[in-house]
Image (cartoon, rainbow, N blue to C red; front, side, top):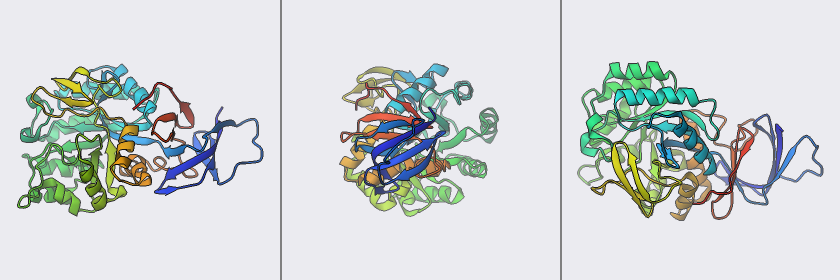
Length: 388
């Protein structure tokens, strides 16, 4: 049935909370939003009662590596499909397939597999690819595999873009590397979001990168020169630039809640993006995993290498939303950061909002931030097994 009507939904979108509303959906789009329950509904509509629970725009994860035992760099299409399924279970309706630093052959294989899967996703839709590396600084490599780190190479990037077409939406680089600013300009000219991280850039180098065209910071505060009162680094440079947005891993591991509040106070919901940065342990639990060429131990939800280095996260989008609110951020702002801001950054103008003539990518959550159901393009995708 391509017509649906959602009754008694409390909508959190565009930093406003509405009283229970009625949402009319047809052919995958929101047609009308009413503030009252209709006296009658024609038989050609499927009726869904939200029971007064919270309806939010589908969340968009611009940085995810894996989920539910599957790593999208493993060379298989099935891993990308499984991430799509798991994202949908956790309230994420669109995502960027995110690479880690690897050989060019492994990266090309990932791109090929994304091209095979896109349009056939069983759950959340692929909004493109985020290249995290390989042009990163070994000094701030985190869990990135040092074996494959290299300086920016325009010819190599041209080959990557030839294979990927328009799929590359975001590239994370260290701009202080030789050729870094040239790469920033090259990508900016092609409409690709340039993000800074795994970088030892000084404040001055970061300011220059932002002036050249970088506009985003990957997992802010993590994998970069820390703030010092005589050496402010990337973070302060980003705080000062109103055009620069920040990713936040809100799992109470990567960022202290006070830092989350600070980022929000400076940037606002329009300048922050909630991400998972999840590895395949997301939705799986504690255990031993192989990720990015490393052995990773997950204990109490923390993913670390043998030397203690943080190695991505296990947080889900609905859990990140809950923890953001628990950090002291208003719910409507947290929703904005999880859905509207990433949609705006990616140019997904019909997503990330609950308005007439937008895509019916919707998530119903209860008071504990459990996902009751996810709707993608007007189609329900639900599974009662989800927990956070």
